[in-house]
Length: 260
Image (cartoon, rainbow, N blue to C red; front, side, top):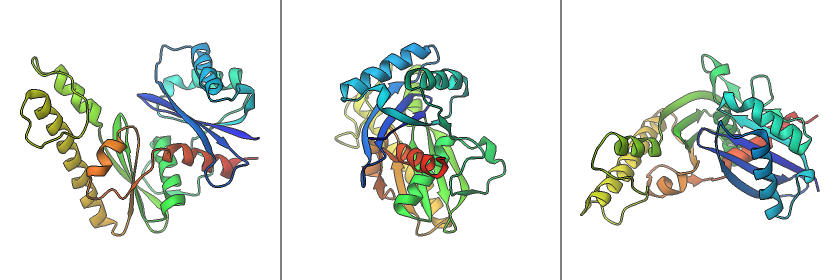
């Protein structure tokens, strides 16, 4: 069994996925999330990942290949050392110069987040072009690919959790609340009112942006991924597909394009 470990390093979470490269159809075997921490050491990341693998009946020695995307540059040395020490692997980093099959036509391609390229590659493979990929992370990103498979750019807005946290921190009497679809639109207490405002306000923002993007790129497939996608997508008028493992799948596809 040939196994590939895909690692997506975000500002809030590090998502890990193990693929069986000899398995047809659905090669993703397992996926996990770790909290992103700049204080965590190489050994702490290594021991946590090894424990997750053992819990799933795997061993670090089973991992033969590793591919990484990251939007947290200060963590790159720690992540790289973790992979080399605990998996004895030379990782493929998603960075300028690697093969993606995607033509990037923005002004400065080197500043484009690796996760946004990865999502676009996976979305094109699964749903075709034109495409709009929405990733609900610490920030919510909208990435647009035209019918010629050219990456045109996108939109970045603060994530839903950032908005909720700002509301809690900047007001003296409003509590932290769970981000979920409320039972009713009109809240009958403070918590319900906050949940309704956060949820429907964000759904309205997402649909407003998508409405304008679809006017410019009609016929686009719209796919959602990221930690809060499963919360927001069902209430959206424009999101057509929910793909929780889109980023991991994109990492696998790019690794395959660049394997020696």
